[in-house]
Image 1 (tube, rainbow, N blue to C red):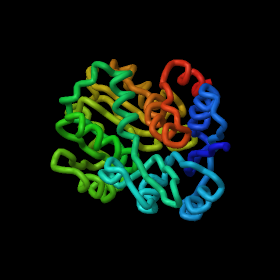
Image 2: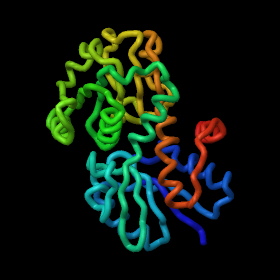
Image 3: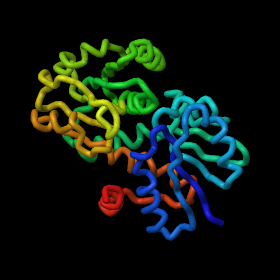
Length: 271
């Protein structure tokens, strides 16, 4: 029986998940397909109802649906419940299981690309969407002492901060640039700077050379934020590795094989 899975988002054309999962399907000689699906907000509920009937085993979920699918799921994992957002869905026996593997992927990528990262340094997180939720939870679980959320809509940042304890606070967007002096990790979880999206405008003048800067955007691979930070001597972490690592649990559930994340996979996704 041919296994089906895919990724939903709006937009979706930028996603490299089809290349990623397609590579694994070929490597492990699995009879399956992984397809990108452009799904708008008004189509989301109907899509989740229809795809299991068409034989889909599950989905990855990207912007802007991570919080909405959490609310639509029948069952949720503890890590999804912790942040009230999901990026991985599994369809089983007429039910939807929601999981959040963003944090797993982010930390694995951060440790791989930035071994100099100091876990005892405060983190400044740009954005308050579904990806930010998983990343903040993972940083706190790793032992980061303080996380500051900066979002263009302040109320949304406050709502996210309320999910966590006093280690998480918020700050107005216009204060982000000077606040860089007090943080050892900067993470962009927004779509700003992505191909086809508005640019991320952030003055890095206060950035220290020993700061680590991570951008979860991976199209382009080296975003303007990362280029600017690298020119200032900072250690930079591009977003492709997060995509690769966060994909492992879903592929394992849907296709029954635990896949490897290696240089061959990275080359295939970048091709």
